[in-house]
Length: 79
Image (tube, rainbow, N blue to C red; front, side, top):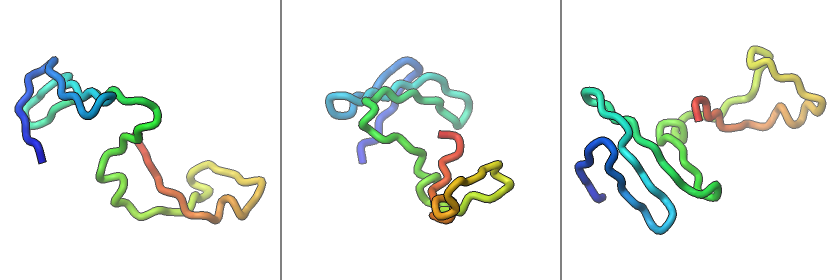
């Protein structure tokens, strides 16, 4: 693991096409921006550890084909 210290406005380049920029720092939190091609998936790690769940009526979803609603999906709220 590479560990670096960056100031607001400074960047880290990953490979040829991914740029990570420090946008803001407040206390113990840093806001970062990530520029990457559409082919690169960017997902917060905690979202990948959540259990998939079935959509429910509370989600406001209706299905023309019930079989499609019965398949589990990963919820990626806030992405």
